Length: 51
Image (cartoon, rainbow, N blue to C red; front, side, top):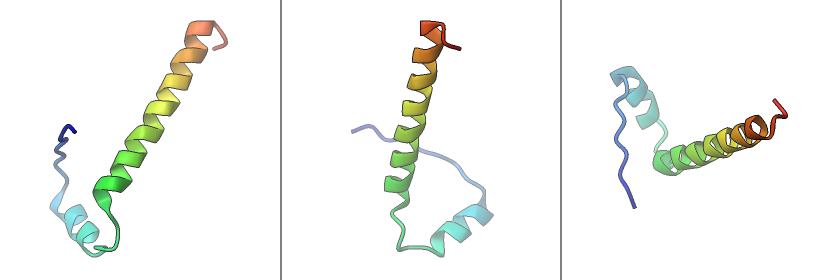
């Protein structure tokens, strides 16, 4: 599996750290997957001439 590193502002990191019950890596992975599905659908529509 690949590693992806992101820099975030210190204030955001503090807020994230207030919620250790959330698996942030898993959350972001799902969000990336969701966005890729949306982009793929957009590309399909654009390539088919429906956009």
